[in-house]
Image (tube, rainbow, N blue to C red):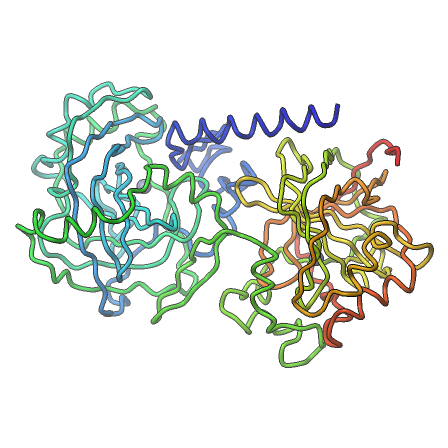
Length: 559
Ligand SMILES: [Zn+2]
Ligand SMILES: [Zn+2]
């Protein structure tokens, strides 16, 4: 039964993700509507609260668009090499904007040695970016994606005047375009961005939900013209409330905008060698944006420029690679300064959703909640990461469902003593079962242990753990997480983070109330495999901030 539910979940999520790919997953393809009207309950200030996935819209720190203050823009050597080509394209009505989607290889751009393929372009009326506080009549966004699915967008500003030839060519296809779209034949982005200009560059986000960060923005200083009729042409097919579809400008939060001149001459290079070098790069499918959503982000600084760069979240890998943190309070690598040890760990120091926390069980409100488990046998290995002992599944070990979303079990590891506390009480150990969904989002179950009878799972692994030296791996054959006793009638839930660097946030925590026994020998066994600075590997409690912790109750499971 449980298996059946799980399979149907997997199927549903596969179906959803493939549908998503087919429809190209424009940033707004989601079950939720969003509005540009401040007064609407779905207005821009509330986007981040409409679904969990849209959180960056309100708590992101490098959001777009912004006002570009030209007096503060720093000169910086940089580049933007354009090499666009003709390719078949389709114009599609997304409801909140019109999008031109290229289906073949439409060429792309190169920024500081990295090549980004042109995926799509779309318009906003009026402009989203403002320059020295001035808003323009329209803004065209060319969205590019590289082979790591990082995005680079070029923004071109328009003011009312002569007709824009790029739009004029597609005029008949734009009129009355629906969600099914109209083929526009072969189209090149070349004509729209020609001519030498100055560019502004900064690190930002998508300007529509999910507002994913990690986007390299290049905004052209040279303003192009668009006719009044063309603005109406672009607005007409959209629902009335999206005729004005510019997100308000966002806080800079310390970001630097840089500026550079286009050194490239404007014409005649399209058939030169540059084209062949671009075509040798593996062609990216046009789903850049949807793929981006599956990535977590880490900040990365280069020459005054702070980018958030997308990377695949993987707790085990990220912590394994580096051993430059430990648990010695006040020490040079201790928990108080994890955030400053490595730029990509910054959030350990300044994150607002950090874990672990003390759970105030007395005051936690009871709310509906769910946790469906459907684990199965899969190959696993035992790993000594240097700072903990973990069990990593390499095959499909089943998983859990939280809020209708399926998360696969990837890893389990122990902390001694416990990291979470309940009403201020710390336990002798805490097991974390780490699950991940197909968007790389993480859900962790935390299970407390207190000294008593031996734990059967560790009991099975005793001989293996004894032989597990620093940074060693031992194959375990097939292991099913059902052997882990983790059923509990009462559970606490909150949104937090990984408790080891890089301390990634947005982790859905389920901490079970029921405490399981573990023997003193087993605690000693786990600790004995680690260096002295890791034998007590519980991160200090983090500020709750304004977060809510709630309790949900479930029927007692048979064990
Ligand atoms: Zn846009
Ligand atoms: Zn952990």
